Image (cartoon, rainbow, N blue to C red; front, side, top):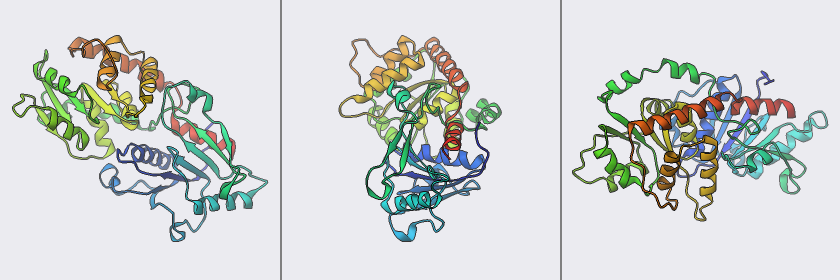
Length: 365
């Protein structure tokens, strides 16, 4: 059972240029606060929150500068739970606070505060093997402390996915037709949202959307996606396109709910596309040694992707293939949508990430 006791959670996040890390951490922090927890989110760069999560922030959630100086450390010490997101390293000065609190509370609560390394999302087999494993620190300010590995994932033997308790209610109240009408987009158009890096198959897709079996309208997110489309789209292209501005996370979710095909990237938007239940294609973060190919294949296996969807993913992610990029049709998108909805239903039947984190902390406290 999940503990209802209010705890203080310290979540640490070092922001990388693609902002998926702060997106995940903000959603986790906001949902913990919505469930009555006190959360301190420690960031080395909080600029993206100005548009991703504009003030006022939820009650119980506060944002703090990275505590690499004594003046930035919390006066009341480390919280009940300390989370390192995506393998970031806690400042030595904060580690000392963790050690001090454990020393004060031992032996009554040898694992307080509970120290968690929240890992990257993957469908690969190792996730089940490594989830919830302990790691005893042998040196430094953290010597003698235990850090626990916690892996999000897609199966019951993993930590699950981020899903707000109010998500189903929000989606049920969403008016897809009204959303489109407010932006001058007809209900007959095939609406395609694009949040990507620089996918190799982008020029082919854009050509398809201009000459497809039904009229299409493209929603292009700011940043790398906008730059990539402007570079690939001919100057006189006849493709209705909306160039979007940065938006808060709830507005991003609504864009996914309103679209017929969502082309997403990274971790946070993959999960949001899954919850949207519409056809989607994932551009996984590319790695120089192509390690991301195995990660993508593991996800497509879990998704039970039909051959056309798997092939499209291969092209979209620059993987070797002899077949041509599948031509988008209404029938194909309906098949992809059915696949997404079946996967969503399987995942919805498992416990979400925040519930599992709370349960884990209750076990270790």
